[in-house]
Image (cartoon, rainbow, N blue to C red; front, side):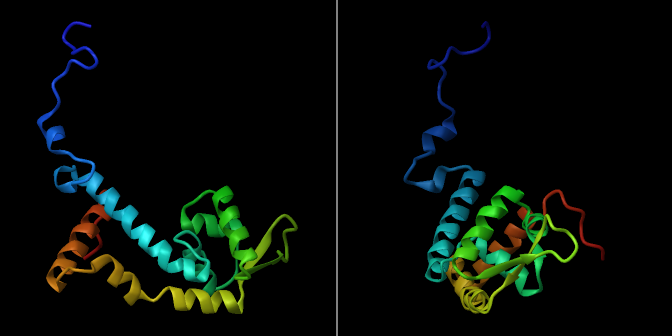
Length: 164
């Protein structure tokens, strides 16, 4: 193909020369954000493991604290597929953190309710101070405020601005 470099013969982009698998200082911002998110998720999962929870199951119990829901409702609220929610619900049921009962008007559905042990586990595991400390360890209060502001900008990109 005329005008295109052959595979393997192109000169590397100058930015790629600064990229190292071990030193993130040359990584693009998207890769840094992804790596940081994975690190936080691993740390958070390590914390939640003490209660046999993880980053996927903990929000389900938080939602169920507000009242019973069907699996489809939980999937929609957590923005995952029903198949994914099925795995999360099965794990929570095995742990004794939720129960299933027949839906009062639809035989095809079941109502999921948090148990007393599920309530106790999620309340204890979800300490916001522990979560914040994991993410912000080593940062000054000013850096935490700056990080929060920047992450909000990225998270809200493409959304309508809040009404004044």
